[in-house]
Length: 79
Figure 1 (cartoon, helix red, strand yellow):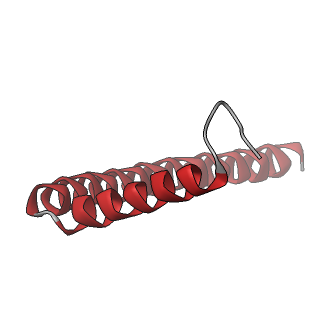
Figure 2: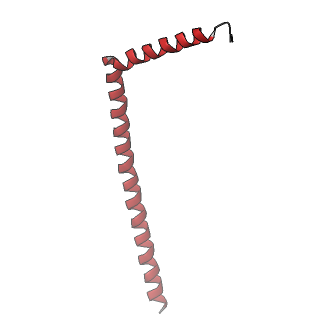
């Protein structure tokens, strides 16, 4: 019935107040601007990471191609 001296009704009122405060925060221009900046930075980071991964992939493919060429040359020299 009572938890930490607050009744169920008290907890319900605290929850309702927190909900109202959250809605007010989400609707504020400052919050929207902050969210936009964070999302923009995240998208830029994703693009940069994708470009880096592509570079690493290309380097790995170059190494594989060079290894295949070297293997072929070694096989040709053995004949």
